[in-house]
Length: 186
Image (cartoon, rainbow, N blue to C red; front, side):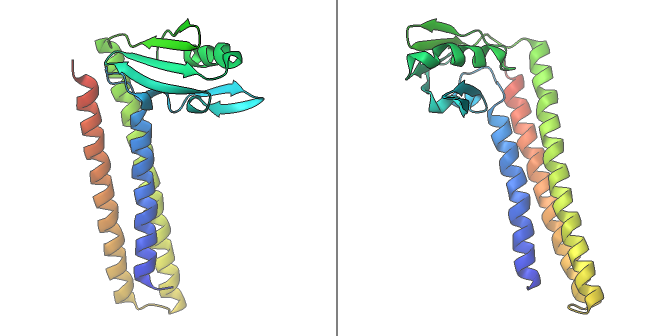
């Protein structure tokens, strides 16, 4: 296994942490209604927990309104319950098979709470990136001890791993900064 391949794999894993962060951020409210807000909500239907988009069509017909067109009328109560129990602070209203979800404006306090939550998500992503770095460094030390690579090659590869780590940490910080600005926008 060559060092370049290992570095590519480490970068792929670090990129996975960044992608996961972006997915987490898509579920945070920013004041405007967007369908990704409901992506993490699961509904008890058909004897198991399923994502909300598998029991109905989610859309955003207005800037401050989401709707869920439930396909099976028997799932309507379960969808409403899942929406109410989500930590989004929403109050769904049923209208036949259509559930309307008005998005109340965010208070300053709620915005600050969301920024803290976003910061927690970013910190988890940084921890994941640092864990990948640690794995890479340990692998390089093992290879050097086994005689697969020289000490100079190990040092060069460690610098490459650290550079990749710094790059991904910087991207995480930039993503957090963008999301914070989006949340705090009035």
